[in-house]
Image 1 (cartoon, rainbow, N blue to C red):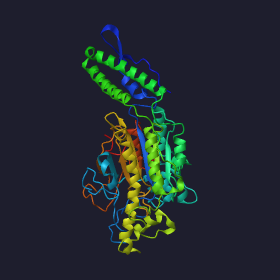
Image 2: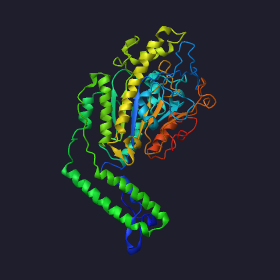
Image 3: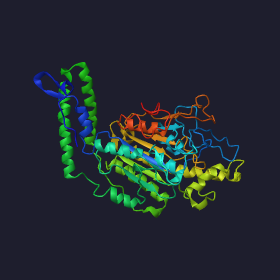
Image 4: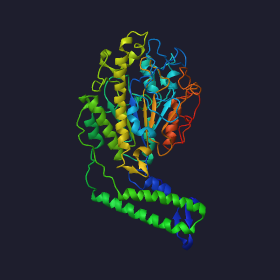
Length: 493
């Protein structure tokens, strides 16, 4: 429901010569209510979650909260291809897995040494297992254990659900969130509507299209849409005229406020003069059994189209831990049960002292292409949000969005929830300075390549920052398994 205008004293109105009233806080109301679908520069949040971790040398000591990193001399391969190529640079230099995101490098922030302390500090072994890591990676919640650690359930919702509920209040949409899934093997969804309420994504692109775009048609603007645009244009014209007249009749302080109003209103005027018609994507006719190489790109297209059309503010793309025979490297090693998790488990066996040292090169080739393919779906979403044909103000939809890419593990073989993979894209309306690499390892200040590891930052802190970037005033998210509350240092502008 729209908040009614109420009297609020001088801040509400300025009276100029001749007795006319000029509403200075109209900037707030034109930002918030001019468009039927929400604000002029709405926030959006996308979670790209890949099951199974990445190529990493992260380790941890059994029964401890902190650990080090493998040096490659034992059974573990000792490589980390998720990390940036230049660890000494605060400017982001993408590593091998993320190289395909180079066109958007200046719109990214890569965070290193952010632990999932809700998992490591509730896991009896201090590392994080399948169940507890999935239950906490997006919720950061207290968990209840079942008969085994693999059936842990959280006491609260995942971060996407919280953001979706809040944005739906200020930016009403048909779907508070959408959740699409590239199907395959995994150990449980990390997405939760609330305590113990696990949610699963739609696996079929065709079914997702039928649900999300029901009643949406493309083509020319309807007569009703044209009337709405005309009314909005008339409203803007009156506001612009009033502000122009007021320029010479107010104090210097209030003139600054008026100038801000005018800049915003002129941006809205340009959007009205160049309306974008919502066009549903075509060719979305595959079902869940079509294969990841078909389903993944279609899901990415659906997410972009739904965000462009204002059908949702929050979208989740969940990628199962699958093998990718369609990549250039194809299947180089034999993965047990034909699942991606078995592929990941080779990481502790292909080092010089491991069981399969001769498989190091073919394993790395397959694993790298597998993870790069997953990132290609992220690239498709970024490309769609950054399309200049869909401008918002002085930028694109990506500037007002925040995309979070992560996984339940850093290293898939040892199930390590320390140093979660974290990549952010977009600046959430300018609240995040991008093009950076931030490492929170306390040992990295002296040696960026150190194998020692300790971090005081947790996903709790990261998600607190995300809520603040979405307009919240939160000082904490999740359980108390943290070294400190508040946002993660240095992320927000």
